[in-house]
Amino acid sequence: MAPSKSRRGWVLLIPALLVGTVAFASVMRSKPDVLQDVAPTIMQEPPADATDPTPRTRQASIAEVLELADQALASMDDSLEDYTARFIKQDRSESGVLNERSEMEVKIQTRHRNETNDAPIRIYLKFLAPEATAGREVIWGKDLYDGQMAVHEVTVLLSWKTLWLDPTGMLAMAGQRYPIYEIGITGLVEKLIERGQRDLDNPDVSVTITRDHEFDGRMCELIKAQRSQPGGGEDDFSLAEIVYDPERLLILSYRSFGWPDPESPDDPLPLVESYEYRNLETNVGLTDADFDIANESYTFP
Image (cartoon, rainbow, N blue to C red; front, side, top):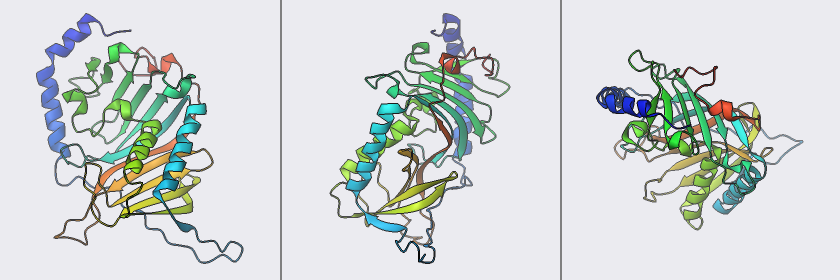
């Protein structure tokens, strides 16, 4: 189903209103009192256990992390058709502004749901926080609506129409680090593999893996990669943390931190990006109706 001519006409009638709304939101996001809600994990090794003297934390390597990521991707290729989760993120936009922490309900049909792992991705989002965006709904599918994002805002001025946006256009990308189609655990793993390949032989990167790290009620592994000096590039970090679920072969969280200000070396490491997938349920049987703006459980006009 493609957006009708009347819908396209509506988009042409409201650019000034939308630009004003986005500009206001961008100003609000850039205020200096936006809090960094994510900090590096401080691990405290418990007292030695006579029944299990093995330390929880051990030294590892980028090669080992890449092997885990490859296993996760292969497992998803084999069996991950869809999932639902509570997605929590806080990151910096391309302009370097730290966005507010946001939470949303996600439903995703993956590309892994056919034999060739190239099925069209479909995504549904319902924003839960912050308050300014709570209730917003978004649907995007590679094979839906001519590739446009269907957006339903909850503000008085915009709530009575479905907005159709280019997912890489100025309005859709305002304050965003990545376009909507890069959301999801598949894209997260692929980015980790890409970044890990660049650091495979980098002597400035050290890695540790901590077992029995609790995340969202599950016993996982916490992987920490730390640089001894800046590496340059847009994805540079001083510390990166990955939460890996060895039972389900899934990466549930990734976050990275930049470098401290030389004039304030004792300040907390500045957050670059943080993504968490909680309440993750896999292969729940999502259908076309879950990505249809006519779904009666959604609020699209």
